[in-house]
Length: 176
Image (cartoon, rainbow, N blue to C red):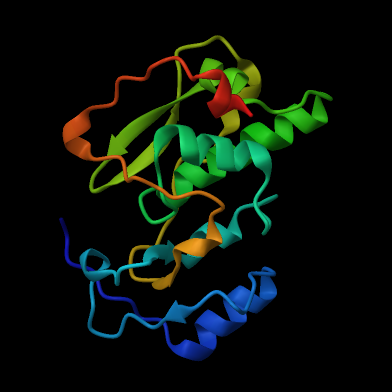
């Protein structure tokens, strides 16, 4: 894994959290000389570029959380392009007056490994609406901080690269 240090300072982290409605009671930490691999216990890595995605809001939507929970991803494991694709899916569903669901999401997208992170990629479906999904995000790997794992309403047992990417059908409980 490429060693990355964050260039963020505390005032930038506070402003980013404040601008996006992230609860100030959630502890944040400036990484300083720590890398993403040295995240303190009870926290996860949070890349600020994911907050640039349209429609991403805190508290997170149910469908966004379903995708994270189903794939066992913390926000620090998913690159900003993956977050953008989840948001793109939600926007399209709402525009077409459909309620976004994990089953529908999986018809159009799947989990993929992208360097040292995970991403979301299109399936081989014939869906012209999905041809304009985000494909690049620049300068994000050195803009992170550590935030309390209480940001997500469930405990993430992180997906590991060694587990592969095979996807099982979701259980009914995972869809609720």
